[in-house]
Image (cartoon, rainbow, N blue to C red; front, side):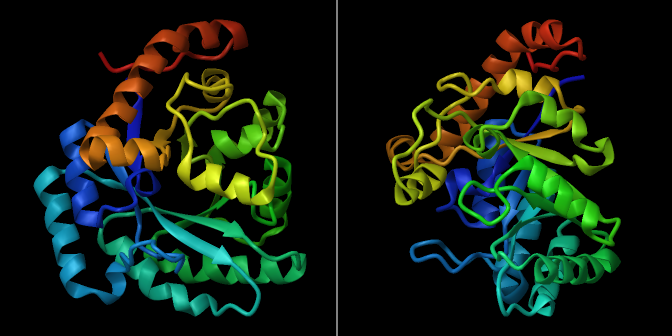
Length: 286
């Protein structure tokens, strides 16, 4: 089966949702991941379709015109003193455009509180047919795959999943063997990129690399093929934010190059990785 690639919004964050949909369709992606619940970071566009009827209409029109499905929406952050109900409008809007998965991360060290909030979010999302997928993030409170899996096992909810982002997996220093601990039913999509071998010297530099300086597949030190070969086949979201390349190539050119490089990487490394791990190979589009 051919690999299915999604264009993640963070890769071309300057695009509105309808613009992203058209960019993805023109480049040949199979689906899109939309940031419809913004973080309020300075300079980050507000694409909250739940509270912008015009933007919602244009997004639905773009999806209908291109036929692209929505792989996931983001981002839910579990933070101190939050109101889980504040996300309900975003969940409803996500369901309206066909999303089934929501990306979430944990930003509080209070474990019992984080579990309570996550369970409430799962309960709010459930009637909309949505699953809450926990991403472990190098700069968040839950930073490793082991921590993410332990957290999810402690949660009393069934509409959950885990997001493996190759960047955060690599920066956490995780062992490939840890991937075998993921229940297959928890893996609904994963996020792919590459990164340099050198670890950023400070937290600020790490934040900059996370959002601004990721690399094409095969360009850095991450053995993406081996990571993918050890997981069930799923949707591969290309989350490769790189401001310099985006400025040079423009959203359409950069999104297209990310996909071309990913397809080439899968074609070149899929069989080698499968032979090395004893697992089925990656599907490559011609």
